Every structure is written in structure tokens, then in C-alpha cells.
Image: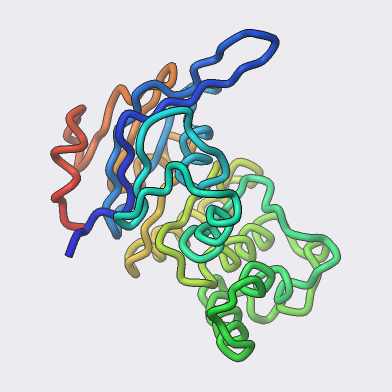
Length: 245
């Protein structure tokens, strides 16, 4: 059984504005295995968030192949992308993206409410379990405005993991937090990875990047380094497609 979760082959993304072409990603080829903890780093505007959006099916490439769990998802419909996102991909954003007029419990349950494959009881169990993992079950009936930034991000993580997705995508998860809360969130991600969760994180923070088991550096829309256990390897497809998680 294949250990490959994500495979990108020669993926390109171009943005067109006022007849100007901006090549955000150029010939990206990448494999992420189940159970890996990958960080993506690079200067502002290098394409790292664009890459995360493509992996998360929030955007589509202009060319190239994207396979998720061995299925080609390059040209699927918006409706199908939404269904796969909801089932297989959990998102953690820098700005938390919690809905202010929903309680903690309701925020975590919201993505699950669109899952036709889950019963109400299953959704409730998923919500409770995920809140316990981030130590926020005692705040289930509170609203986001009643929480600190660190607590809001823990709720956002609970929402991301509640449906047992295939991968967690984190976009600058500590960007809006002070150092103490940032350490709490990174420790939580470390724990989730140790439990087997696949994580792909975009970060500007070198210290956060080093906590991942694999670090990818991007410059001008291209992968310039792919480091695993302190070994730089640009031929990442051949190396990582057979690696154990």
C-alpha cells in the first residue's frame, strides 16, 4: 500500500493582472508522505502560501498534475474540491478564522455539519475529542471574543483535526501570537505529529521550521532546497516517495 499522500508533478501557477503575468510557482514537483511533518519557508512573495493553497484545493494550477491519496485532483469541479477539502484537509490560519457569533463547540462542529457520512452523535464525539486534545473542552460554550489569541488558535486546531483529515495545512500558525502562546501551539503540533498526523506548515520563523522533520525552501516560485534530517536533497521526488513516515 502506497505511503504517498500528496504528489505534485511540474505544477505551475500564473496570476494575470492588467496584462501582466506573475509566475507564482514554476515546475513544482513534490511528494509528501503520510505521517510527515513538513515546513515550507521562504521570503515574502516567494510562492509558499500559493503552494499551500494549491495543496489545500483552495486554488488550482495552470498546468501540472496534483494527486491526493493517488487520485488526480488537478481538474475536478469546485463542488468536488469542496467535498474533498472538508473530508481530507484541515486548515489552520494565522488569523484563526473563527466565526464570532458561534461558540467554541459550534465553530469546531461547523465543518463536520457538511459531512453527510457522519451522524450527529459521531460529530459530537469528534468535537469533544478534538477539544480535549487541545485542552479547550472547558471553553466549549464560550465565544471567540472571550478567548485569548492562543486559546483561539487552539480552537482553530481543534476544528482542523476534528474530522480526522488526511493532512493538516498550517499557514503561519503562530504569526499572530506572542512567544509564550507560539510555543504552546508549536508544542501541540509536535504532539499531533507524534500521534501520526501529517502536517504541512508555512512559516517565516526558522525556529518553527526546524521543529518539522523536513524543511522545504522556496525562492521565486521554485523549490531550492529540501532538507530531511539535516541532509539537503534537491532530488526530492525520488528520495521521499519511498521514505517511511
